[in-house]
Image (cartoon, rainbow, N blue to C red; front, side, top):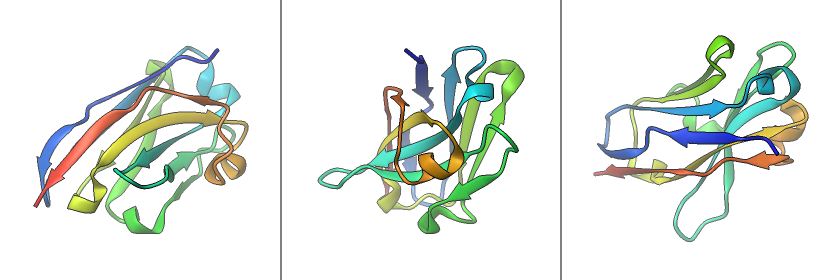
Length: 123
């Protein structure tokens, strides 16, 4: 089983920033694409962003383009999601996850989920 641990959630005012972290077991970034999903109250879980394990290319959901940035620090076995210009509609539980490759992960084909971290954006 792949171990993933998301952290960094909390309360933030609209327009503010937050950085989420996802700690992974060593070697995960070599073997899997890794990304972020979120689930807002009463809504289905949706993909936010993911990054390829082969070439580092990234993909973003349209609603977060230009505001969120995904990155990874392979030496630290950690992935990040920098969230800027936050909006109340970004309020959700954020999950990190891994998939076989970026294409499948971006379509929601997840092999392992980490526990989520709550982000609440107040207006």
